[in-house]
Image: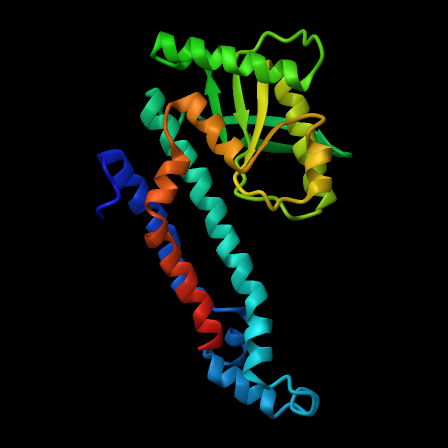
Length: 256
């Protein structure tokens, strides 16, 4: 593991690789239905009175039809990776416990009341380092001023929804996210949503920016570094070769 220079980075590396290792065990739904292997699925399609006529029993079609579920599985793992990494960073760098990073609230979304949790919660007065606490508080005040003109809010912390990417247009989920952001603001908590890719849906981003402090791509990595002092982007880049291998291997299995 030559690219990991500290014990904490070794822990992060192990965590990421653990999530990625689960990709090898993912079996797409059509393969399960056919008996458990891609070859069995091809044989089932070859006997189908429609699929066999229009070339849907070809390796190319099978790869395409399996790709959707596999891509979804990959993205779910990436979401888990970024949420767990950010949590680990704040635990390690700010001296907080996982319990201290927990925030649960009852929110109203439409006509339904539901319980929601923030992915990461940082309460300023729980940060041991006074210098770090002051720096984080000032950074959050600046972000709040960018979110609202003349904000009349005394911030006590940050509530984060950590997303590796946001490409869905699920209106129910968006309503719940907006309700959570409004709750956080009323409670004096800065609603922060780092989106670590640049491929998120522009319409969703425009919608969220009215209530969330939204950061995308390198700006997401930058805000994590500002708040924690840890260079997550540098860590990811240094371990890029290791992190690519399980994903590429899984994708190759669709066409191999």
